[in-house]
Amino acid sequence: MALHAGVSASLLSAKSTILPNGPLFQRLLTIAHSRHAATPLVHDLNANITANAHELLEAVLVLRCAILDALPPGTKEYLQQGQEVFLSLSADGGYDFAVAILAILSINACAVLLSTAMPSRELHHYVSKTRSQMILYTEKGASAATQLVRDHAHSLITFDLHRFRTRVVQVDANRDLLPRITISHLPQADPNGPGIIIFTSGTTGPPKAVAIRRSTITSGAQSLADQLELRPRHRILHTLPVHHATGINLSFFPFLMAGACIEFHTGGFDSRWVWDRFRRGDLTHFTGVPTMYTRLSRFWEQEIANMPPAERTTYAHGVKQLEAMYCGTSALSHSISQFWKSLRDGHPVLQRYGSTETQIAINMSGRDALDVPDGSVGRVSVGVELKIAGSADDTNEGELLVRSPHMFAGYLHDDAATRAAHDADGFFKTGDIVQKRGEYYFILGRASMDILKSGGYKISALDVEREITNLPYIGEVMVVGVPDDEFGQLVAAAVTLREVDDHAPKVTLSSLRDDLRRRLAGYKLPTLLRIVPGELPKNATGKVVKKVLGPLYFPTDYAKDCQVQVWSRRTVVAKI
Image (cartoon, rainbow, N blue to C red; front, top):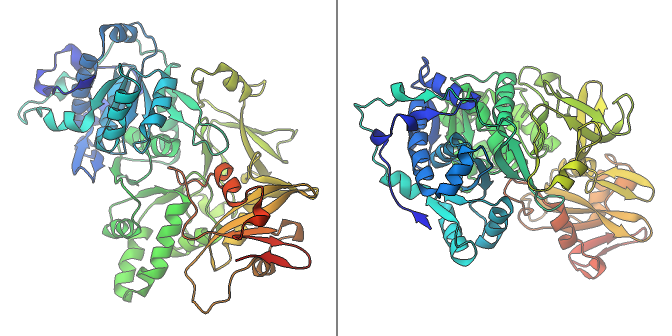
């Protein structure tokens, strides 16, 4: 059932200009009446649309009316009664996404965030799991959404955001809707009710539907905005997926609450374009993942470094002007981290730690980043409690447990999984192994994937990856444990190579081990090696999914695979 009708902003009734009584819309309306009212909150580079707080709220009110008109009477009654209603949103970051998620929240429904890259069958699984009544989508998600309704969910209401926006009658410039926009005098909807559903990345298990409370959306965003000292003068370049925590909880809502500008650029990551954007200036923040930072550093080395000095300086100046650069999803390798630190006159890319369930738990600010030890993700975030499982004084190594006012409400429709994810005191069991040194935390890896047990030793796969990545000829690396009858697990490394001279020596397992001997203890050295052409495959958030790639690159019969080099004390079996 598709919606094709437009709604005119000038026809909004008095009742339809009342926003919910909650911190998010109170804040946006305050910004719209402030001296920063003209400052853009959203700048969509792909759609060439800019919107300040006033314009954003107008668009939200118009879309809200259209959504309510499309919903059946029974669903609207559920909303009026304060019952849970789920609406799926398949959109890339941009103006349409910003308006849609705010419109969904403005009717006290819950937004289920989905990737536009999902095929219809996968889309059907997530829509069914959340019992969504409607799916709103942008151009990129249109094909899968319409096929979903045709093949699986015949009663699901579809809403084409792009078509709606292009058909909407824009409010007349002489009509100012802002004085008519008010905040409801009625109490806000249940603050503990679900406001957003984010599916976990599924790197170590099936994706789970994480329910984020309405109150947590704003409390977490405001807390982070305060810690990062965000202001209306700030502008972030947003290139990350908005259906994952980093793209929505870290790079969207905190900047929105601060009245800062979110500059969206979607599509495939283009290193040349990003460097040119840095060069143009007026950006203050950038958030990326390790893959992005690696590609940007290589573009510098291969292209910018060969430019005339005057031209090269303009690129360097652009990146030095950024007040903060953040890395999400996983830590940067030492070599890449040092590249950016050197380029930015000693200012590092800021690491942090969090999860979909906890939001930011460990953080560092730009002001104290220079004091953070190399390899650390920082100190405990404000208002967050941390403990290490099995450690009485919280100074030893073990699984990190988190309790925070910004934590998730639970896994949707799965009380058993929610209970299992917490200890008796309500701390979330992250599954990540950490080490605390003084007040600083160091991530050693996932307990299920990154802590290898080989020959009686416990080995951090991340430690091995860090040292391999520091080798000048290595591009990327993934270290996994491969089952073995004698040792329990073998240390296996899948690597990609940087572009090297054709006359350079061939990389073998033996040469790799020789180069690592001064860096790693003998029991940590890889005993299996696979050289992967190009890049290691990654999911939408830029993560290498070890549970998938490990068995793919090192199957149970790896000894028969001519691409796998196997170490023995006498010789290296390298059938390549």
